[in-house]
Image (cartoon, rainbow, N blue to C red; front, side, top):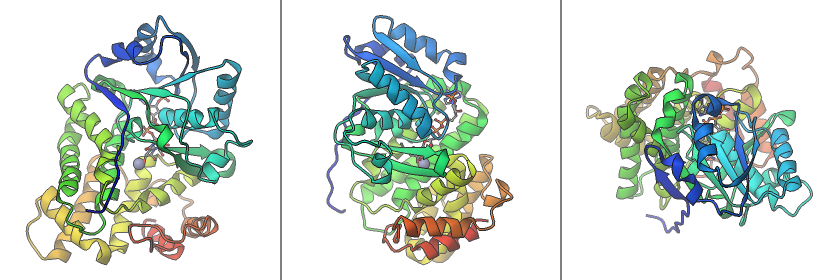
Length: 386
Ligand code: NZQ
Ligand code: ZN
């Protein structure tokens, strides 16, 4: 294993009816801004549960954070934070609301003139405004990590940010929230979490046995519960495994001491920025091509994944590794997720060149676990995904 340091300060409150425990977690004298999305929480009862739990707190609300949290909307929320002297943020939503709240946590204490600099200059936040979350959609792991991804429509950009000051103080995970999630978003959540594990696992072997087995166990669990979750989101046991797998996939644990890739996400974010394709679906478009293009560098781990996760025992390393890529693509299809860019847009010609040019301009000249994936190679991968 490589050397590492690991600190994750987020308190997880997991289980049935756990939203009622909210009031214990936020100081009584806090002035809270509750942030949420397009209103799903009003239909499924989560809004009422939160308001009941916070009946004795001072709470104002900011609604309307869209999927792929939009910078212009967040700047409106930042004004509310300043005008109302807010001291605590509460995100009630999925990755988009939580990420938007992380941006606000950073922006509220940011000393520069232009909060967009946090993203474009990659400024790490050591101290943000304190915040907690009530998770409504298992997928991103944002509820237990310190990263966020923010979109700016005006420039068709989608950029990442983070820092040690941006872990939620607490996150409430009640698996019952998944009962109201549409099939499309359930499939997205499964795909996103699955790919998070792949990004931290599908590199090269370094004999980090425990890290590999953590990763494989999350993949196996997601494969096992996926059909159950899609068939019946009221299946509490399956919902619990699904929710905890998503959190564990990206709370930092499995990436410690091992190489990481993250090229699939870097390329995928561009597809969301350019075409508005759901985050998880962009990953399903890029991952198979990425693994085919980088086959020689990744085949040992692909073969290990074939054996241990998909029980493929026949054939040599190359054959197993190829079969693993096919199995992965078939798994996405089984979830109802298309894996070609042309399935999502007719305007795909030129996309590969656009992304390659953007990466060159941003000086992203070497992605992946070897920092060797050049913009030209990225262009090839995107073309393979048309
Ligand atoms: O806006 P509302 O009305 O809440 O509806 C949402 C939204 O339309 C709906 N939804 C959420 N919970 C629901 C529900 N509908 C019914 N019942 C519920 N219980 O689902 C839709 C999608 O929500 P969103 O938050 O956008 O989804 P997700 O959690 O997949 O988040 C995606 C965002 O997270 C970023 C992505 O790039 C994307 O912007 N990511 C964040 C990461 C991180 N911070 O670590 C890592 C990821 O790789 C990812 O990049
Ligand atoms: Zn993701």
